[in-house]
Image (cartoon, rainbow, N blue to C red; front, top):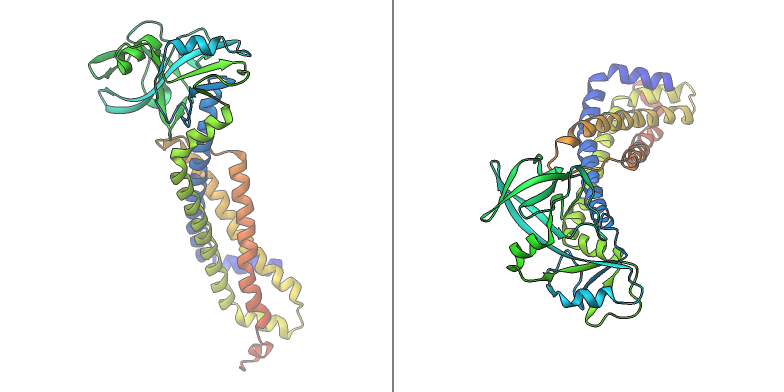
Length: 349
């Protein structure tokens, strides 16, 4: 029966190819959405881990250092540094800005810091910014070392590049000295939006909260909650669309083979091999579509404006869903085949 099923696919090759192409298109779109969803979640963890901080110090009641820019005065730095359990501390100024180049405006996440302390930025090429007017930017900005960026009335010189330092849905980071960030954002006042520490403060630091990296990651993901939930719903809908396409193809194949089923039954063919052939057809369609979709998604993903995280787990999920969909929808034709009257083989209803 397996040989007969394959022979049947040969006779209906055009329909099979069209079914594979349509299903592959849906599978590829779904795989890319899964990659975008995974990227949104992973970039938050990656960004927070880049600071290598044991605790993030923010004003009491503030949800997190990235989603709130509540300034803290310089004297608090001494209070944090002298807290029991803290081996080192570092003030940061985190805020969002828009820079311009010949291509137009670009959103950036500014990280203003003093080098040589807790935070050691992952410089991929070039060097850290050391003087006023120098910045390092993430490669996602598509800038090069030596480029100039305009921030308001300021001209900034790119001296270094980072890789993978993005957050808020792929927005690239821009590093600058803390004094420069304070001048731009706070008018030169000695303010910070957060302190990061090496070591965990023991007890409460008066007027301040010490957040764990996990809490900061969850807060950083919060603004993207609606987007990630929407992507999840779209993924579910696309899985159902793919199941519908495969189900329709298998159902039509079953209708075309109604007389064949009747002949097989009339000649004493057992149900088991007959049904195995139908399941094989559904699985072949689903797996061929999954393979084509994986190849297409891998080719298209690099051209996306944001990072698409296509991991081994994403491909494994695609194969698992393809097999599950193939098995589920094959039940449609199985039901058709088991209900066929052998009398149809003799031209009677």
